Amino acid sequence: MNDASSVSGIFWNDSPVVIITSRREDEINGQVAVTLVTSSIVHTVPRLLVGIWKGNHTHGFIMKSRNLVVHLLTRDQIALVRNFGFYSGRDREKFPGIDHFEGKNGCPVLRDVHSYVECSVLNAMDGGDMTAFLVSADYGEIVRGGGWMTLADFYTLAPEEWVMEYGQKLMESVSFSMPIIHKISHEPFEP
Image (tube, rainbow, N blue to C red; front, side, top):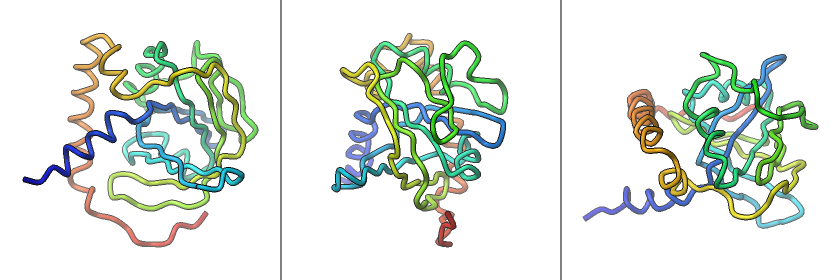
């Protein structure tokens, strides 16, 4: 029996739920992501690996600006997951009513989150339906601290109708991904 899918699911379930924000010229946007890991053993040179699905509007912002902000959420910030993860920035503005400021890298920074880190893209790798961005963690702050939200927390804490809606969105995303997931470009990234 091949348990590769089940083992991968363990990583998925325990992934932190983060909001990624970026700026493209005068536009700002943000999205929810769950693919994020540390990628440097040298603590004085902090780096992250951030996976962004190509169907997300924010992907184009990051490709253009080469900057982003990663926000860890606390477990009580489910409403931010809905605002940034259930709607596309192509269809509606995501920042009205959301307290934020412009970070040092020009991207929006959400206030009152667990923590945030402003990042600049160092390199990227095509993953077919997503791009894995190697980013430098340039400036950050622990704002509230404490425990942060994981995907398992989302499934436990969110109202059932949100979980159902998220499941539907995930099925639609898989439909987008299937035709391109194996079409990986091996062209070098130009930062």
